[in-house]
Amino acid sequence: MKILFSIFFALIFIISCTPNHYSAYMNINEKDLCVNYLTAGKLNVNKDPMAQAIITREIDCTKYVDLARFELEKKQQSDWDTSSSRKRTVTCQQLGKFLTCF
Image (spheres, rainbow, N blue to C red):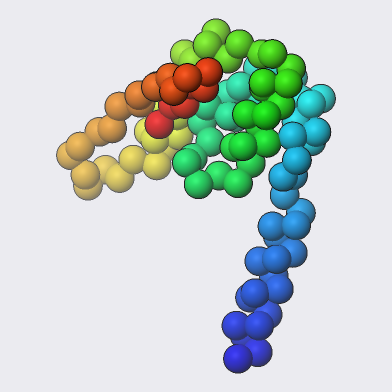
């Protein structure tokens, strides 16, 4: 029970340390913000605040799609299991104003 209790508080501490308000992303340069947003996973807790900062700053991230795709492919190549014969391709998809690569 003590271990479970400790894990719970550790998670709360970690979550509280993550920037969950868009103001944390207002001073990040445009390229880094867009690439980080485009390459963030679906479950990334920072994705919504990044999107809000992009909207507030009226940034067009479409010019960074190729760079985001390259970053994802580079990460997938380094993570690629040599025993697997299948190789994933990176896809970028626009949903309304938002563009996401996966």
